[in-house]
Length: 108
Length: 113
Image (cartoon, rainbow over all chains, first blue to last red; front, side, top):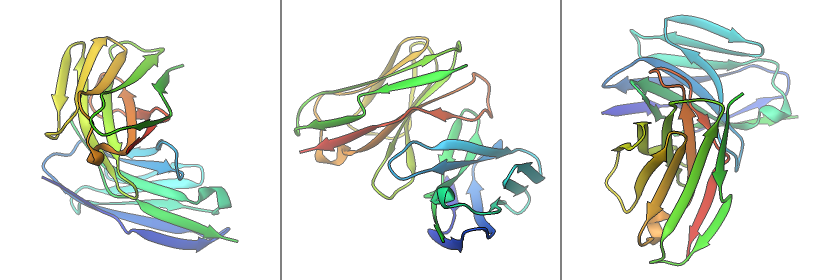
């Protein structure tokens, strides 16, 4: 079975940093993906980790610890446009299993 | 570059009516194709996926079916819609290797009356 947990909501101030945690227990693991989904829109791919460690992509970074079943997405220098839902997804062969998503609200 | 087209964007259907949603991908060959449903305020539920023409894997038992008549075309169908079929339907593609990111179409918002 697949169990992927992430917080439901987070609020942060413009210019700040927010860390979204994701823990998983899955029957298989090939990698972990993060997606951003604005309200009413389709998800867009943000980042991907297959090995332990930190992957940095501009203002966004993602970290993975396979032994702990844990990942986080770090959003730096928050902007109002970063208000969205962030989805953690575990890859197993050709399939992704998604968490329920974390809604991040950025306040001025 | 690769693009994915999904239509229609919005659909309102009566209970018991049939459904056909279409998705096509351009700019790539032999993609993996996926259909997801997202209920309001919920995560994405994988409905079907396909790694080749005519090959369909179903993830959950339900009132829906999928077909892949061509390499880059994926169709989601139902003979008789239920109220519970309402939701946001998303088609996605990935390169034909494991562990590749999936890229989503714009989605179809389906309301059943």
